Length: 258
Length: 258
Image (spheres, rainbow over the protein chains, first blue to last red):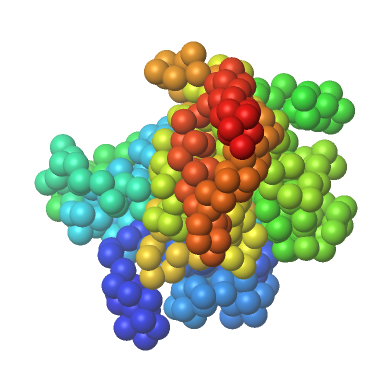
């Protein structure tokens, strides 16, 4: 674990399991550094970056992180959101645009509690944030399991990236310090995102073969809606395997008929 | 009210009554600007600065505040903490050093709830923060009515100034959005700090006259302890007047005897 590596190398103390932080196309190194510092203030240390604008490593990020430089040194860079969350089982995306997606919308406190319950069961979880200019795009949001919205002054709602990170890290730490609650979902250990992605590719490929997406202009929104509906199910690895078996069976049936 | 001025001038919408933010000897303009932005994100707009290191106005603060520049423009500068909180009736000081003072220690959430109850009763309240290097000094803390401590990772506890501001502003806004609770203290409308200061000066002067503070090396700590004990009472204006009458009466008695 990245956490363990950092604590061993830098004597920052034993860090407990915590969510991964994914910054999607962050622009300013200063904000990446300030985010790293905010993370470590509340016991988070695993940082992942998707296409940072100014490349990586970024000296401005290291300078701004000050004592949290080990978080910066341990950061991993990915070319896409699916790559960055491939091993994650539960992803919460921070956004102000909560009405555009049929995903659960959590308060920061609820997000902390949900992450605490899931990490307590051994799931790999992520908090995902968008870049400074536009935040997360819909195509990023739809890869999350839930959205989290920070309740801001509607007249001045533009929250700095590191300020969003610190509020959610703070709520995580509050939840982590509370007694864990027993979730109803305790037996439903979700599949990693990469398994879910393969299921979606399999399904969409099969549907393309039968020209399900009609008219073709509606394909993107139909794909998005399918993805969100299935993602809300929080499918386990076994369920993903079953569903792929279903698709395979239906396809074979059709191929047999044609 | 500063809030009203800002909303009228800049169309930032109607802001509800909220705590004043006092930054004591802040060093970097960037942190003042980031604090102003964090304040306005959660509906706070009245900023007071005690001896900002680089003078005032500070272009770096304005640049960093971006859309919250009106908070910077409306900031007031003071030469001392007592001056900055003279009209305040309740002051919460942010600090990690909570064991050194016999003051109530609140969590950020409790501080939000207490401020909400008091501002709902019409009190002028402040959230006070220290500078980047050392935070608030003991002589600042002892002028507060309560301390608030943000629970951080003990291995990396150094929280950026604007990050502290945003967490407490966020907790204020959460409390402000909840139903107000009825406090037991509803009839105890505290005196402004400047009245309390005059009471303390009066009392200490009277005690100096009778060489109460002995040995003289212990005077500072004895004064501090007296101040904290009396400050915890949350004296009303009427009570401050009564106590000054008591001091006057005792002094007159002694002067008559001598």
